[in-house]
Length: 90
Image (cartoon, rainbow, N blue to C red; front, side, top):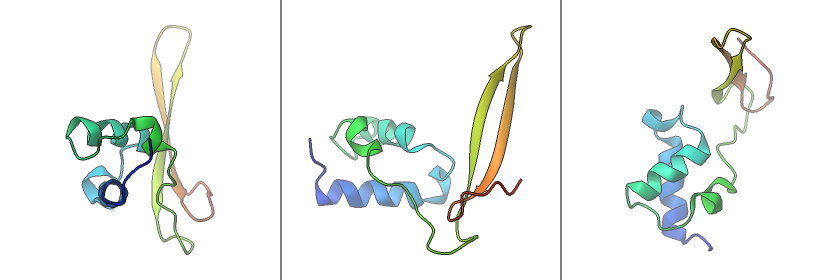
């Protein structure tokens, strides 16, 4: 299913809105569908390109990895990345 122009604009606004900046695109697509903002499947939306910075240090994002250790403890590894260069900042 192809997204309509209105759905693309809606998703762009949701991705750029400060309250949703921490949400991965795939999860945001599911949320948009649940809220009735788009009718397309989340797989159609998550294939679209996300936010891209046009200059270094223009946009930052956080990547999270969950590491399960032997005693069933979960460790959360967070990395702050520069969107333009993809370098780890912190």
